[in-house]
Image (cartoon, rainbow over all chains, first blue to last red; front, top):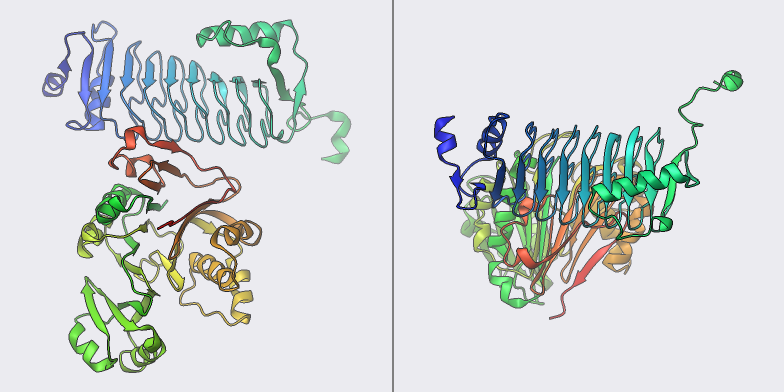
Length: 243
Length: 296
């Protein structure tokens, strides 16, 4: 590890720099994985990412990693505690299976953003493509643009907040995740229905927007809430004869 | 898996670099398709001449082949395991018949006024190098890196598929109704060289365009007639088009500047294009035809 650590340039502003034009993704992830709780290198900058896959995956310390460009597949996957900022676009599966922390995509995200994420927050400044928040398990996703079709497919827990529009089949086969969409919804998936906004929902939405740094920027009254009608996944004894 | 790429020059200034960019893009998609690769490039052509891209038997002497065919006004240009036989348009049928009779093992890979098509088994970087793709110039081109899942790793199974003059197609995905569509097309007299699902899509599009349907309209009709997973990138003499299936099963990303339009399965393949940092980069919508026509 000593040789690898030496290859990490310490810039004068104290951010450690890893240049992927000269170093491998394995080296990047190895040096990030080796960080202990007492390590004072908490600010990292990744240059020339060129949409390489698996950047900054499996982080487990509360460090900040800024990716100066576009990220490939599964960026910040399995994240715990870390703050990962993608300066450009993110390819398939950004922050998939995130457990905690904060992942911020400044550009657009490709499909399956935040897939299966259990905790933490994923903020996307641009649009997210198809299947955003698929199988969401407890994380919060805020998309400032629009989301593609089949977003929140089989989402179990957590929230998906969309400031723009949602594509076809939003929330198909949804369990108990909470969906808030400000714009137009092209269509709802099986068992996903509009729901009334009550005070706890307004409070929840406000809290998520505030956590994303968007408090006061949009009117909570413009959002509609969607969720499960609970007809698909709940066993009704009254219907036993039909099963 | 599989990777597909495409590049269309909006500005003639980029034509000289087209092959070099396409080679870089193809190589970047190597880990999506390491077993074979292929590409088609729309090069310079003449209205009175047809280019037949051939894959003759190994160790064929091109000049001897040309002499044996005996077509006046023809020329041959070997490139790797392939060769482009240029013949006067009026002698095209004569050339095809002579090839079938004299060198029946020769595979006719593609034909057209401007299109040249090369494909081979091997790593994409090696395939690009073998055919000196980086030295080619052209108005547009498409390419494919293959990870075979359903049929053998053979040169014939590699993409692009060309089933009409100056027409070619690369496909990422798998069609589910290809047998039924193939049967229908066979009854109508269309021939198939393989059992490959992608060839069915290519023949289906060629059949539509042969009826006079423009490329973009033919692709819209494909959304109704072809079932399965697909991202298609299609080239014609003057056109370049992209279509994804209605659920966008396979990944795709596009970039456009005032000099070019580029397509790739992954952004990694676009990362080295000139001006990419300021290009408009987007993910093509499902069930939406994106098409460009040469205006020069």
